Image (tube, rainbow, N blue to C red; front, side, top):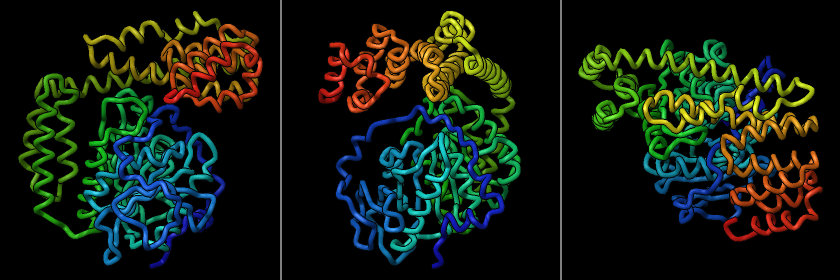
Length: 501
């Protein structure tokens, strides 16, 4: 079998320099802890990949043979043998937290028979080269050592690495059969999708939280792909900017199995197809008849698109047509369009505020910033229940404000040593999420540099109370030097060092 290589494909591309796309994914959020349910299946021994590796357990840390600077976790399904070729999932967490997507997918991979490789070296919000290096190493190792189906490689990304997955698929034509894109769309928006996604592209299983700041870009891609012949399935879940719930992992891999049968990449099993279809129609009907249904039509539309051409969907089409003619079905379309307009307005207000903070000589007053962003009104709407659509929109706007004022904007301001501006930005962020440890710590850093020891120590104590910040991050930070002689600093560090803190 001819092995595929990432960098060879890149060098052959005419646009090599242009590949450093601005994958400014919103990666500040997401789960940060290991899934405890995976612990019993984890083997922590450091290994190198070879043909004698145990199956049925997560091998937590392997050193790449192709590039010893690369590390990844590996899972071989318990029935893995070398007498057949297996599809492979390449997991690309935007912060190199390999075990988080591994925990998400491991059970579904075991049930449906996928090899899983998850990198500790993939990143977002920075140079793209580390992701190419990680893919190069994983591709080289699995093709050299394991019995894998090189027509059925699947890329699994979240936020910036979801965008990277689409770029990567162009470098490996005919090899990437599908993409899981969580929390983001494509590298270059609608224009990129129109130019690069077509009937021969990888199938997409997308997932987006209703409160995710990137919600509209994923919804727009979903609508854009409706006009193409590319199979796609985009799930919306209750959540913010994070890896999706575990039940969607099983649905994602089942979708990949269906599309592999559709495209002739594996033998067609009509009995299995019809069984899944029956289950998914029943689940869609339950959603459409729920007391407070977010959508009365969409769940069944997804099932019809997934199975059209694989089984008889005519009865389902009749059911969908009837639902679309109901008053609620018509209102659903109107609500979504109105929500998209309002979301764009809120995003534009934040973008203008961020631009003005960056350009201003002196930071705006906090009260002015709070009014400008309507923090009080958004928080009130987000906690209300009378209008679910308004509640979701406000919650998403607050998540977007937090993401920019706690992460992206301070990062730029600290780089320019503009600590007063950074302190204002982080004060806004802490209004949205008062107890979030990262925002508290960065606020303490800015305030310490401004000489406001009392407020800096309060922010540092908030970081300690969050149980999210390791003491080593504080002790090694030169920007906190002005606080080190204060007993409150020492108490905060001691709290961070306590077990569980």
